[in-house]
Image (cartoon, rainbow, N blue to C red):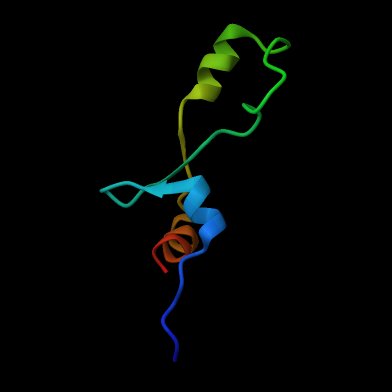
Length: 64
């Protein structure tokens, strides 16, 4: 069996923390910020953890 490769698209978008959490950027923070409230813009700057039901899948894709 061949060596498993990491998924490059996922690697660019998500990061694995030391405790094993998968961290991602929030959706909706790309552009059109003027129509969003300040509180919403600040919230969009923060990273979000991937839901615990998806952690196993993304961890396997990130590490390969």
